[in-house]
Image 1 (cartoon, helix red, strand yellow):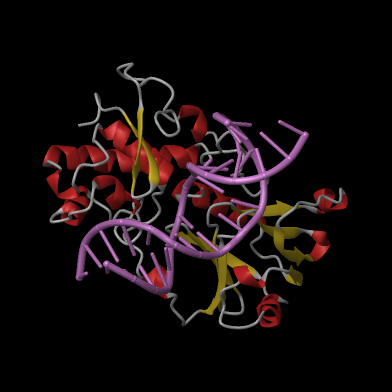
Image 2: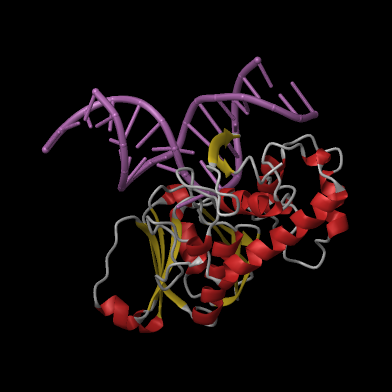
Length: 279
DNA sequence: AAAGTAACCTGCCCGC
DNA sequence: TGCGGGCAGGTTACTT
């Protein structure tokens, strides 16, 4: 679920709420999620007493800096959520199934890692260490370094279909299934086109739509589908789902031309498109 | 070496 | 009402 706009929304929420707070207690019950090269006990001891100093995002990863020079890295997987609770909410004795880690600050404020499917992962690395999976991520699509020319370069000689290309984290970091579908629909490009077959004009359009879709989704706080699985750290839903054009709409008609929206699998992922509008 | 697919999980929805 | 199958925003590791 969480793609770049959702992770960015979580990042902003964390920046507003947990920077400067000291960790006084940690409860961690699901060692499977913790990918640090040490035990659950060591994970806890490296957090105790630390202060969060900044939060960054790389692709779909959150990088939480601490004053100990360790970095807490979080990937939310499909169903991971970070939930921030103030003392007031804590006092309501809020409990939820699938809470795996609780980071407790003074005044009983908490940051909870909740993950139904447990596909999410958490690491602690020291400042000098590098996490290979982050090192190998592709370009950040909202950074100035990502230009039309750069996109042109990436699609050259690329034999992947364009949908797989967009979701390839080693090419562009952060685009997942929902936004890949939306970007291609708004670009009028068929998801099965070879990346290398795009014309210069199509690359320009695609470039603009990547930026537009991701930026607008961030403005709206990400996408919360009907099942409500994604929420920001305070439990608010993202509103981009209200303006989704194509993802999950296989039983309705194209909002542009009215023809039926088609649904296929591309690389085992649900793919929605309009064969009249997308060539 | 690119490309397919099995694996990791829970929960929900659908058809029988 | 219940059971089984299929499906879900993601990624890695192992096959061909």
